[in-house]
Length: 159
Image 1: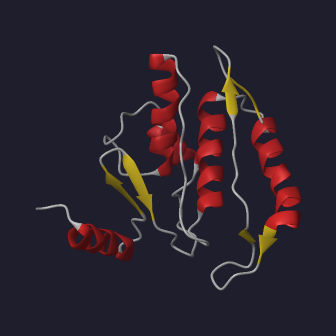
Image 2: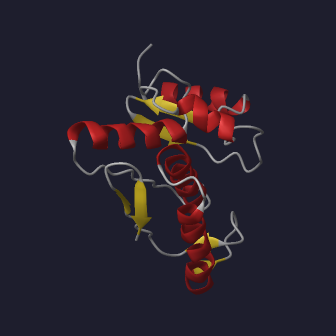
């Protein structure tokens, strides 16, 4: 099979019809907003299944990208970046929340304080920078930069 625009789009369409919203192209994750809840896709059990697994061992998932970034940071001792991009309503904010949840559950303090602090800041940002669009009643009108710091043992804090 040749990788071109038509085969890529056909593969993504076929996977989407099966509620498989994530697809890899090498180490890039393509995510399609399902506009519905998919059961158990983001459960604690799913977090545990992806923890410590090399990219490609498990089915494509945003948790796999979070895990790869964390493990690469530890291995090469350099900062890592996850860039989440897409059109309005594509699910960028939700994807960022899932990555942060994965990192805090897998490698952070398990009392939920850090994840709660990040999620609690969203309504304040949204109050000043969100608008209703045809695809999303609460669409961000700004870019977000989230920086997460780790010490030698656990996630420390975010900015």
